[in-house]
Structure formats: structure tokens, C-alpha cells
Length: 465
Image 1 (cartoon, rainbow, N blue to C red):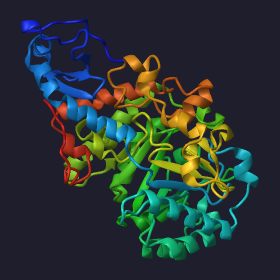
Image 2 (image 1 turned 90 degrees about the horizontal axis):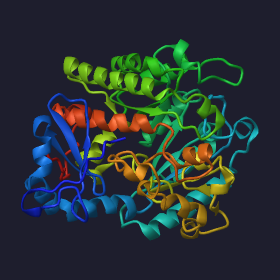
Image 3 (image 1 turned 90 degrees about the vertical axis):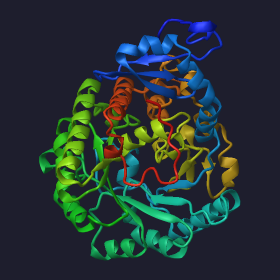
């Protein structure tokens, strides 16, 4: 939690941290020369020389700079939090999975013996979703639809038929465990420019297979790596590593492994505790911070050594949230999160929830896609409860300087653990430490090294140092 400074007044009665004037928190970022001064309400920040931080707070210049930018900052933040239109769907064509991953956010019984969506229903669903987006998005916009899971390729024939019919409208993706991704399937997806997300949780079978294995307990490391090697270089490839207490110490080695394989973009996502399996695998926060930052350090070093980046997407998204709030690509580290307002999820029985994480929580199903128009589903109480959850609305997040760089994620996980939405994230300390690390990266002049090439294109970043 950021330290809150006492009320101060600058020359000529300029309020620095009192009353109705601008309020700044001091955030220690672990840099020998700089600290961050943050106005939490607008996510405005400045890196101040450590030795001159008090002068920054007492002087008139900082409040003046803030007041000049306040309206724009507030508008940008408000826009990304409240004014975006839904433009993506996570679509589960089946409840079943051929793996029994220990942390899955979907109930185990459904994954083992659940239902496939009828192929005709899948086609009907895609048409209903297209009709909704055509009526809400600007002309020419192409919403994203990710076939998600469980394992979507268990319903491969229906999924591929949907891609063929609607590929000119949706930007399709498939998130898969890779075990069913044979040559014909890969060729089809690549030919249709479908995004392919693979899951791999370690650099060795000894690590990766601890949490990702078949119902009989057999690991799938070798199969996944084979597919990964075949797809490296495909622009639509993305890799997800779910970070648990079983693999957290291997994160630096995981970065080395992926970099050696030629992977350029990966997510190192801390596990969600939405289901009991995930809660049992939550890593220790201090250990998570240590090894996650060591992995980022290693990714930076490899980039310097080889001239080839491996961008850790979830951390890069936080950096974007700092320097160009409207450029965020992911919507988990802001409140309200993207669930129900930027995207929503459709389950195999037509149930609609704000996010895939909520599919295993029936009380957050807004209704059924085949029975209720999408605009009405998005107005139901379960959706409204999620889309109105803001970090400034509950303690201790309402006192935190980095609340708009964290977002107190994830509401489904928070609800599953606390029985309510208005509570901090179970990995709160880690997210605060991650914000400090991000400011440290900026203070070191390394921003570009952690972001995708061309990230500045068409952006107007807001950086104050």
C-alpha cells in the first residue's frame, strides 16, 4: 500500500495535499534516485528526484502541471473505465476438457462430463452475436471472438464451420491446450488467420506437468512444445503461462525457454482463485514478486544480448496503463474490469456471464443468449454488479495510490473468496509491488524494452519525469 503524505501547502497558499486541492501520494519505487508522486484520482504521476521530493510537494510547479493536465487525464481515465463498447466475446463451445488442470476456473464435474453446444446452436449464437455487434459498433469494426474453454477443439467441426462462415466478420481466436491441434487443424487456423493461444506452465515436463495433465495424470508438455515449435513465427501465436505455487520459482527459466524457442509475446498470469483448485495453488505473494520480477529482468537482459524481445504481455499492459491509459490491451488491471463492459462470455448451454471466470458462478449468469437479446442481458443485475464495481468504492483500495494501475482484480476471484465483490484482490501486495517495479522501469529509461515494437504509433503518451 502506498504511503499517504500529510497535508501540505505550497507558496502563495497553493494547496499541494489538502482540502479540495490536488492530493499526492508518495510511492517508494526502489530506485536510488527517484520516487513517484501520484494523484490517485486521475492516475496522474510524476517521477521526482528523491532528494527533491519535498520541494516538489511544497512548490507551486507540481500542482500547476497537474491542474493543466487534470481535465484531460480525468477524461481519458473516465473514457477507458466507463465509455468503451463491448467488442469481444469469450465463447465456450463445450463444457468438456480432455485435461484436468488443477487451477481451472470451470467446475470439475462439467469439464469431465458436461455438454457440447449443438452445432446448429453454435451457428445461431454467432449470428445473434453478429447482429448485436453490427447494431452497436461503428461500421467496419470487427469484433473479436475467442473460442475458449474447457477445450474448444473437442467441438472442432462446429467451431471450424463457424470460422468458415463468419470469418469475414469476426476476428477469431482459439485458446487450446494443443493436444488436439494436428497438422490439418493448424493449417486450417493459419489459413483463416485465427489467433492461436497455447498454454504451457513450465520449461520442463517436471514443472509444467504438475498442474497440466490428463484425467489419468499423464503430462502433455512434449505435445504442447511440439505444437509451439511448429507455430513460432505465426503472427497470431500467443502463449499463456499460469503462475502457481508449483511453477513460480521456474519463471526466469521459463522466460529463457520461451526466448530460445523464438516466442516474442507471452502472458505470465498469476492464477485466479475462482475455484477451489486455483485457491489451493495461489503462490506466496513475496515469492511471486521475487520470481516474477526476476523473469522480467531476465527478459530484458536477453533482449539486450540478442536484440530480440520477449514481451510479457500482462506487465506490458500495466506499463501502457501508466503512460497511455487508453492504449491498454487487457482490462483486468483497472476497475471496473472489462467483464460485462468490454467483453462478455457465452457458455456451452447459452448462458451469458460478464467474463469466463464467472461461468462457474451461476449467480452471475445474466440469462441465456438464445432466449434474451444481448442488450438486455448486459443490463441485468449480475452484469451491473460487476460493471459498477470500482476500487475507490471500498477499503482499503479507496486509500491506495495505485488503485487505477491495479483495479483490485479479479471480481470473480474476489467474490469466490470473500462472498462479495467489494474487497481487495488476494494478491494485493503483489500488484502494488508490480506497480513499483513498473515505475522503476520508467525511471531507468527502459520503457521501450518492455513494450511491443511500434507501441507509440498513433498514441499520445502521458509521461511526466
